[in-house]
Structures are given as C-alpha cells and as structure tokens.
Length: 186
Length: 174
Image (cartoon, rainbow over all chains, first blue to last red; front, top):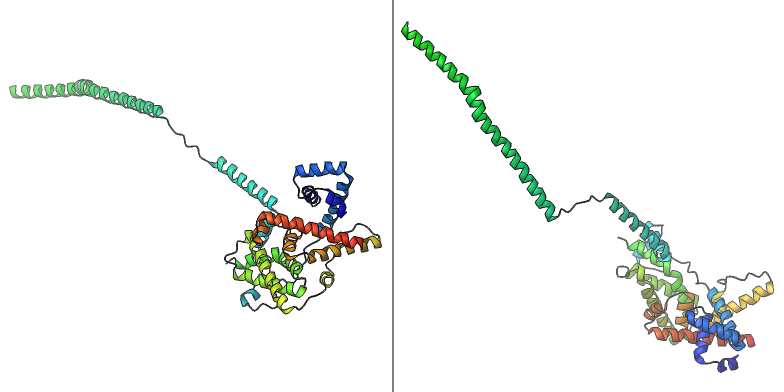
C-alpha cells in the first residue's frame, strides 16, 4: 500500500483522504471519484481510508456521569440545583436544534408583522393643494353665511322694524294724540 | 440571578466533551475525571464572563490547558499510567448490524484498535483529531481553542489521519 501511495502525488492523496472523511469540496469529490474509476490504485486507497473514516465516525463521546462533582469544596457549586428549568430547556433547543429555533423565531416575527399591519390605523397625509382647496371652500362657506346674516339684518332693519313694527307704533301714537286733542276741545 | 441555570446548561452541554477530550489526552480515567471537575469549577467561577451560547471554545481551551498541565506534572512524577483498553472497556457500543459473533468480535477489535491508535497519536495531532472527528468542532473553533492558525489545524488533521491509517495498516499486516 505504501508503494502504491508513493506513486500517487501528495496533493492527490490529501484529496483522497478528505473525500474519504467526507469533508472535501464538491469539485475534489468529483475529481477523486473520476480518478478512482480510472485508476484501481486510487480506488483501493480511497476505500481503505473510507473504511477507517467510517470506524472513526462511529466513535462516540465518553459519558461523564458524575455531573455533581463529589470533591468540590465550593459551597456555591454544591448547592446548585439540577432540576429542570425552562431557561435551560430553551437554551438547549437553541443550541442543539438551531433550525427549529430559527424557524420558530421567523414564524413569531411573521405573526407580529402581520398583526401589526392589520391593527395599524391609516393616517392620511393631505397634500398642500388639498389643504389650500379646503381652506378656500371654508372661506366661501363663511362668506355665504356672512352674506345670509347681512341680508337678514337689512331685511330686519328695513322691512321688519320699519313696516311691521314702526308703522303700527306710529299709528298707535297718532290715535293717542288724536284722543288727547279731542279731550282738550271738550 | 440566571447563574445556576446557565451553569447547569453549560455542564449538560459540555461535560461529555470535556471528559472525552481529557480521557483521550491523558489516557487515564481518574485524571480525566479530575480535569473535568476542575473545568466545571472554572466554569462556575467565571460564570459571569462566560457567554452561554459561545462558551465552547473557552471551555475547550481551558480543558486543553488543564490537560497540558496534567501531562507536564505526569512527566515529572511519571505515575498513574493505566492500560488504554482498561479505560475504554465498557464504553464500546456495538454498531455492527451483523449477528455473526466472529464479525462482531472483529468489529470490536477494529474499533478498539482505532481508539488505541488515536490515543497513541502525538499530542498536537491528537488534540486536533479528537476535537474535529469525535467532538465535531469546526476548524475555526479548534483554531481558537488550541491557539493555532486554521491552516495548521488542517495540516495536523491530515497528518493525524495519515498516521492513523499507517498504524492500522501495520496492525492489519501483523
């Protein structure tokens, strides 16, 4: 095997190892696979490294069961409660399942945005032309009202006071004067 | 106020990583347990400064430093070297799908041999190999934890893989 490896360039061997351990780039994978198809020696090396890599990847972390160290003198540590806790569970989810937590955050933000858009009150921004037009119309309305009041005043002074009120009073005074004059004669 | 849950979270998350790394580096269960406890104390003492979501590199750096200290002390005292197979006995998980007893035994032997050869790797190659292959750390995380450039991490990993392959070939030839 050593002899075979020496016949293959160091660069190629590095690529073969990366492919076997499954951390090579896609291009390196293609290159090595094609080379392995053409060259039986390369295929043999690749298979050999793949076999080792497969065994290496089976190795699991050792389990440390003594979570509460017996030899700790620090009282603060000894008092630590190892009960289930919401914060810890949440942190565990965030660290161990980043895709789920990202999806949850996106969903939550989406719901908040939709809720905000639905409840938002529309504040209409009037243009300068619209303001001027409204101002002009208000002025016209006030002018009409002013004219109506003016006409009413004139009508009241000229027609109501003069004819409807002044004339009967004058007539009344004339009758009283006449009665006084007749009284003097008698 | 959140110190306890934060501590509990960190311990739950990293105790096996600390222990695994220590056992591969120190080749000894008792020393590995002691290092794990010391790291746990350090985590508690620095709980205010540790960011729970980015603690991995700090914890692994601390573990590595403690392991180096232990190895130095051991080199001076030259004591407590335990047979590797004894330390890993019982931790073997049979992943073979075959029911054939000879196949199971062979797989177990290969598995044990690989573990043994990993432990026999030179310290600098082993630390990178264990962190990458067994603990699943990324190049950048290893680079920070071991204070070495990313390119060196890649080179050491490659060398470790080659060394391992070479030793396994020798074993198969025997």
